Image (cartoon, rainbow, N blue to C red; front, side, top):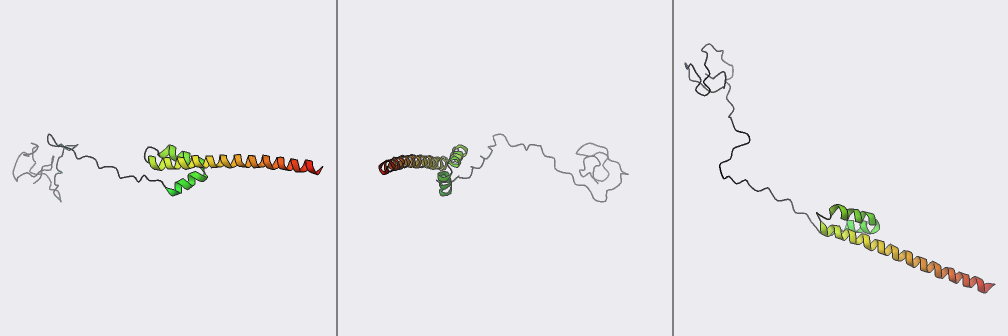
Amino acid sequence: MFCNKCGSQVPEGAQFCAACGAPTAAEAPQQPYPQQPYPQQAYPPQYPQGYAYPPPPPPPPVEDVPNTGLNVLSFFVPIAGIIIYATSYQQTPVKAKAALKMAIISMCVAAGIAILATVLAVVAGLGAAGLASSLM
């Protein structure tokens, strides 16, 4: 027989439940399937005094080597290299610095080509002006 209040097993003929002290009714209807009580556990679980919690697992290692694809992207689109550096310099500093370096190299090459083109245009313009004046 089972207690109607807590569900613990009570010996036949007992007037009170040994677990909770509730009176048992002899004429209580029998349940078709006896209920087994759920084990009562404290929440959160109680650990013994001095229990050492296990340390959390270490984060997975991050590969921090320069990436060729990001470097090529940073060379042809310098703003992408600056954005890559700004967003990932704390997690992967080597990869971020390589992307920034390629963006700076790209800007220097573009500035050099612009200066060279300007100088050549000026020289070609002076040469054309000199040729035009000699023909007259």
